[in-house]
Length: 265
Image (cartoon, helix red, strand yellow):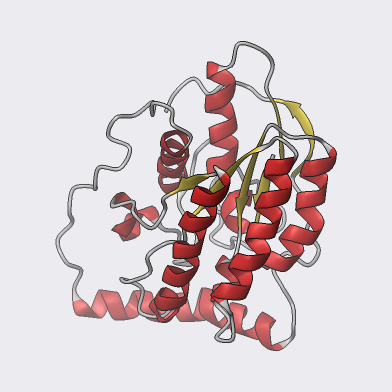
């Protein structure tokens, strides 16, 4: 079972792997796939029996609601493997306390491990190259340190998103500069296999892309203005109104169901 927020829901990836026709990732009609769905397909391909999978992640969710609403469902269904990834939306708030978040996360991991589930955690992305999100870098680093410690204490696995070299390329990121493209999700799915101690399907899963020539300054400014208008302003407006992009959302795959094996990396 996959638990979490938009990262695990799979925003900006679609079932057939093609780019979405629209650039509005908040459009509730857009289908999502994402790294967790891909991981389930890879595991189904390697499984001798039927693999059943559910994805309870909902965009915009803070860590608290993820732990309160989604973890009990995983416990109720006695899931064998639970990916528990959250805290990214909390980190965007300047008052976020990574120590308190880690304490709540560890309590959930203890409960899942006591129930016999393997647990896959994830580190946050290194936002060093983002002119806005990099302000969260120090808080994310503290939470990441906690994640690795929690995994060591309780025998969990860690998907090392922070350490992925390939994700330092903006071509791996959607126009909103927060969510991954289809190729980014594909590579994270490979990283998840590695985190679970399995061989990746693609040996070059974290190889950087061939570099592009620097964009002219005028083009960079135009892109920044477009981003502010199309993504930053709507996000800030929702925050001021106390709203979330996931307020009316429900999990896309709430029930455990068989998974079609992935036939390619």
